[in-house]
Every structure is written in C-alpha cells, then in structure tokens.
Amino acid sequence: MNGLLIIAPLFIVVVLGMVLRHTGFLNQNDRTRLTNMLYWIVLPALLFRTTYTSGTEIWHHRNLFLATYSTLFLVPMMAFLLSYFITHRGDRKKQAFSTMAAARANNVYLGLPAAVLAMGASGMEASSIYLAITIPGFNLITILWGEIVLSGALSFTMFRALAAKIIKNPLVASSLLGLLCAQIRIPIPETVLVSMKLVADMATGIALICLGMSLELPDIPNAIKRTWHDVLIKLLLHPAVAWAFFLVWPVPETMMQTAVLITAMPTAVNCFIIAGGMGLDEQYACDTVAITTILAPITIPLWVAFLGIG
Image (cartoon, rainbow, N blue to C red; front, top):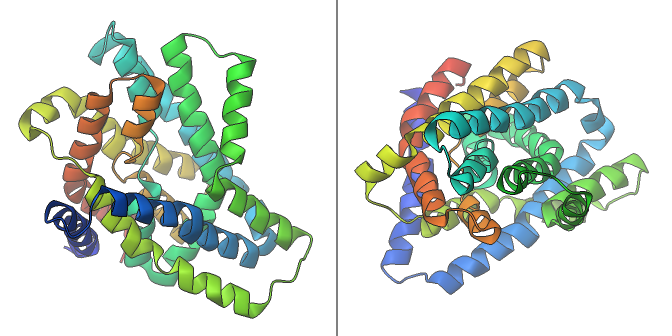
C-alpha cells in the first residue's frame, strides 16, 4: 500500500500532462519549451547546486560508481544476448534498440520525483548525487552499446564524436562544473545558491507534465505481446542487477534505495527520439516506452516494498 501511495501522485500528474495536451490547453510547442527549460535551466541548476554543496564528497562514492557502472555494462550485454539468440533473431535494429534501452531508465522525469516523494530531502540529495555520478556514463555507455550492435563494430571516430557530444550535454557540464568549483573552493554567494534551489524545486512538476505530454498510447495488448521481453528486462532485471551489485559494493541504505528505485523506472522517454536518430525501429521504441510506463505502477510498488522504503 505504501508503494502505491508513493507512485500514485506521480502518475496523477503524468495523466494531467496527457489531459493538458489532448484538451489543447498545452500543445507540442509548449511541451518543447517546457522540456528545453527543464533540460537547459532547471536540471542544470539542481545538479550544479547539489554537486557544489556536496563538495568533494562525491569523489568518495567509490562503491556507488562501481555498482552503477557495472550495471550499465552488464544489463545491456544481457539484453543483447537475449535479443540476439531468442527474441529479435535476425533483426539488428531491434537488437540494437533492446541493448541500448535496457539500462536507460527514466531517471529524470520519474526517477527524481519518485525518490523525492518516497524519501523527502534525503531522497533529493541521494538522487542528485546519483545523477551527477551516472549521467555521463548513462548517456555514453548505453548509446555506445546500441551503436556497437547496429554496426557490428566500434570505431575511434565514433567514440570521439559521441564523447564530445556528451561533454556538451548541460546535465553533464553542470555536474562537472559544480564539482570543479567545490574542488578548487570557488565561493558561490548564498543568494545565488538559494535562487538555484528555487529554480531546481520546479523539476518534479515540470518533468512529470512533460512526460505525460510525450506519451502516445499504442494498441496496448498487441504492444505488450511485441515488447514483453524488453519490458521485463527494464522493469525487473535492471533494478535486480543494480541491487545485486550493491551487495558486492555496499553504500548507505538511503543511497542504495534511491539508486535501485531509479533503475526500476520505465524506459526513458528520449529512447524513441534516439532510436529515430540512430535509424532503429522507432515504432518499436515508442511501444516499449509506453508499455513500460503503463506497467510501472505495478512494478514500482513491488520494488518500494522490497527495498523497505517508507
């Protein structure tokens, strides 16, 4: 019951986003503006402030780094083997998508709000540290997995171009800048930090409304039949592997709960955008995003109970 109470407000706001779009109160241009504001202003303010105020403490999260990055390597490999030998035999585009999307949880639009709602201020702090540490690898490693499967090889030129693109990501840049300012002890006026907090506090509501406006509901029964294996990997296998790695590399309980809860989120909404850009099966990507999001209210409470949150 506690898990349902945690997840219900999130999906009510997601539904609000869907209603606002379908009634015409907000349109595609509005969603683009809100998403850009979230991506370029709100989340960078959140990540900069958190990494700056956490100081050099982030460098001491060795076990968190090892557990999360081991997950980013292992889960896509498992997804590739399953898709190559069983579920998507002979279809390299679907194999590449399954591999790329297996570990791309909806960290921002649902993960951050879920952690804050479940654990309050401690969840906000833990999720911000988690995002600051994992966002560079999250973007680089998962997309590299997809490119490797699609092309059958990895070139230095491909890696260099992708790395340069990741560095320009405002979420990566703000995290690195916050760490740098903390490391060399650049003083940031308290007024600026408080202003950043006010901006960062908008993240939860804007993220959930944008998610609702982005979702396209497919023919649900047929979509489930097509995507069930990728749905199980994302909603069950991904968080299970993350939890297992935290047994090997323990972290404080709140950090472990936050990290596993975030990995239990549905497939990231931007996966279908990435799929289109990479020349993968875009319709299959849309179906996977939609079905994992629809079924997440069933699986997330199970993970909340398993993790002992609340």
